[in-house]
Image 1: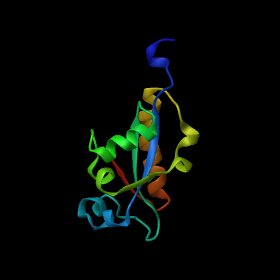
Image 2 (image 1 turned 120 degrees about the vertical axis):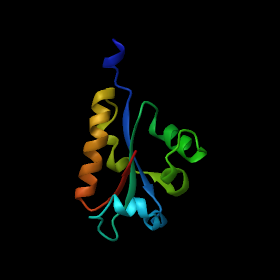
Image 3 (image 1 turned 30 degrees about the vertical axis):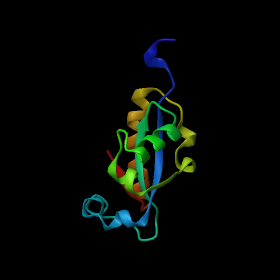
Image 4 (image 1 turned 90 degrees about the vertical axis):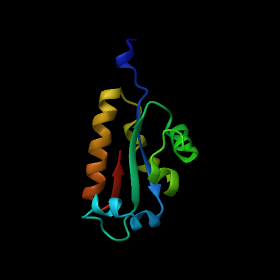
Length: 110
């Protein structure tokens, strides 16, 4: 199978601890956040989401919010979409972030 047609990319969602809301940058990016809704990071990877989460937590190519505040993966929010081609994963990362924000989630995307 040609490389670009391979289905090995994933979108993933990491639940963040409530303390991330104390970060002004995070708050400014989420003006429509509804109190009590989850705070999450939405990402895309060519790795298994479990491996990618472990790398974030270890500080390897890590997003600071995930490294410092990441609690757990939320496969209930992303597993239905995976795996997919690279281009589709790039688009789905953005779409998923928008959809979660519309539901009132606090969302961070790289």
